[in-house]
Image (cartoon, rainbow, N blue to C red):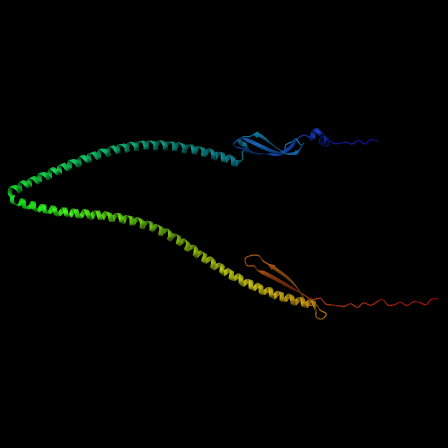
Length: 318
């Protein structure tokens, strides 16, 4: 008898080689991209042959209705921003035109100002020349009138005045020479004082920088002193803690030796108490060592006396 095996349709499709080589993917559609106006579906391979790719991307077009509310709001705000930017751009262009116009008018005003300034300088020069000529002419006329009057009325005094004028002229020449020599000396002194002032200014700047550096170094020294003082206090506290810990360790060792001696030689039938020690060290800046000691009651030594079985009575033989 031959046994017939029946397979279901799903098993037949699963075992069929052509159906096995097909690629099956699964994935979900992503959000709509507002720039490319597409949606991307990233699919992963569920079943298939070796020729199937591990991942596959599928795209499809989308519309603005598929956007999330936040993206729609951002697009509206983007439109408003673009409108504002266009307004600002137009305002900037107007400002550029106004600035160019103002620049042109300012250049024209500056050119006219230069022309007027040149004309004013020429007029001032002409007025100065004419004034000098008029002043010279007036002085000459007055001098001539006085001389004529003096020559007419006081011919004898003219010679005396002339002599006095000559004497004054000679004294004035002497004073002028002295003042010229003094002026030259003052110029030399001024140059020397200027050089000394420059050298003193350089020295002052150097001393100022040195003073600033010394102040900075002094502040650093004060800060180091404060840090050294704090570290000294911390070192003293740590050394005192270390001394206390060492004394505790020494005391603990003595107690431990005593307990060992009592455990080795118990007194009486009762054993000595049992001490359980638990030492913990905290590895931080304080370095605390915690000793936990628990005491247990000693065991009682009891000796059990065991007796053998009682001998049985054997009956006499018959």
